[in-house]
Image: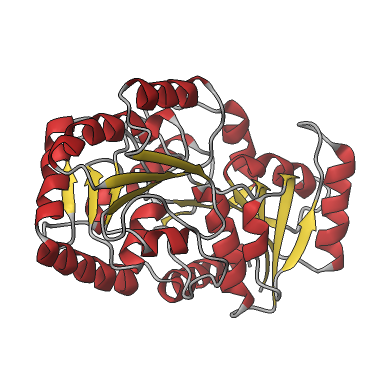
Length: 362
């Protein structure tokens, strides 16, 4: 097979990481694996495997004919059979298919606000789905939505997965005291609900003043970001809650922390939970999206209700006070993640599905 991933940017987000993960994982398994970025490069460019063919389209507007024909020439030159389009990049994939009908499009839905999909409408996506050979959804709710809304006949739920090897980059230096750090890996977006984390930190510092919170994620410098920073300043948490923005070596940050948290209001299947598990970090997360399918019991982590600061604080305090429990939860989650959310298993299932789509087309 000859497959390319296409994504709008290489900034540090879940969809972007998965595009890189698929390209890297497939490079070990198939004849040709490519990664195409349409609009903007970013931190994740450094994580692309040298075996992956890379193209940056430099797309400047929604319909950029130069970018479309640059993509067309690349696909023809490399005899690509499948375009695996992530999120909104389906649009340019459809445009190029109009000039190359033999190309098969797979669309990957990473939509993160999946708690209420009844109001999710996207006419251009619905029309574009006529040209999709198949749709991948990162959770079962998104798969059900796609089956009911899109004009396509082949659907599959494939969970996000983690890469097999750790990055070997310069160590990220964290503030706070060693052995007393809590990490949250989530871009600064409203659905990630960092305000819950800040409110919890304000309570926890009274009992455990040595423990600190470390927030990693892209800062969009918008209203949400400004409100969050104002709250941290107003509550005088500047030496308790630290914001680091994005990093290309989140592994290094996780390795320096004792607890991993995710306070989201809405999720698909967050990579952060899988990354915490890969490093055997005990996890506290809200009961949204597919998180409960990863953390299925209190043997694998602590689940609290969304936006419930009391439950969240109690869970954090429970782990702070019990180092043995932290170790047990981390080890159990690590085993679960390696068994069910590994690159090897998901890539194998993905390739089998693509082969079935090829057979159906004959």
